[in-house]
Length: 232
Image (tube, rainbow, N blue to C red; front, side, top):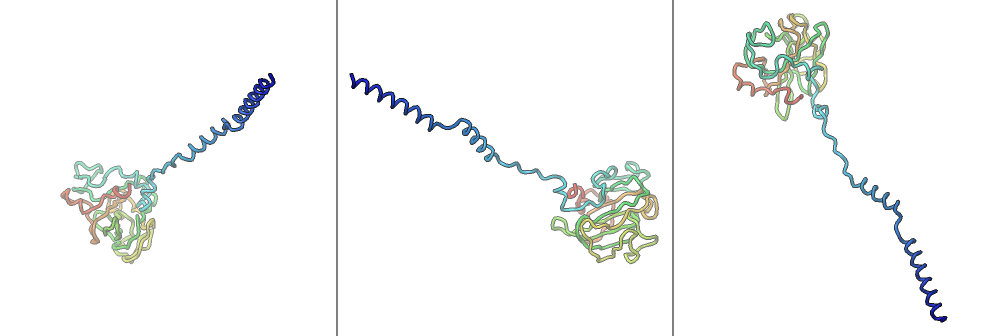
C-alpha cells in the first residue's frame, strides 16, 4: 500500500515540474510580434527618388526667365510664309532655325542669360534682328555658337567697343553660366529691326558665325540644335 502512495506522489511531482518548465521556456506573445514588425521594417527597401525636371535642367541656365512658357508663336523648325505666319505682318519665308520667346510687357527690361560657359564671338547689329550677341561654347562635346537676337544695343552701336546698354561684353570676353548678357530691345524699334519684342534664340553646330533665322530647305535644319532638346 505504501508503495502505491509513493508512486502516486512521484507522478504528481513530475507533472507539476513539467508544467513549470513549459511556462518558463515558452516565448512571450508580445515579444514575438515586436520582433516580427522590426524585421519587416528593416528589410523594406528605400525608394529611390525620381529625377525632377529641375535636376535634369541644372546643367544649363535658361536664356530668359519665361523660356518654358513663352514659346507661343514660332517654335523650332516651323515653316513660315507671309500668308501663314502666326505673326502679322510677316516679311520672312522659310524654316525657323531657333525658338522665339514672346514678351508681353514692352515697357519692362527683360534680361537674357548665358545658358553655359563660353566666349563672346560677336556683338553688333544684324538685319532682321537689330541687336545680336553670339557666343561660342560646347554642348554634348560639340562646338556650337549661340545667338541671341533682338537685344538692345546703344543707339548706333555696331561694335563691341560701344557695348550693350545692359552689359559690357566684347568679342573674346568670357561668359559664365547664368550670367546676364543683355536686355531685349524695345518692340517695333530699330533695336529689334522693327520686330515685336521677343528673344530669337538659336544654337548652330560648329564654331562659325551664322546669322540665318530661316533656311529654305527643311534638311538644312540639321545644322542647328533644337533648344528645346536640351532645355526642356
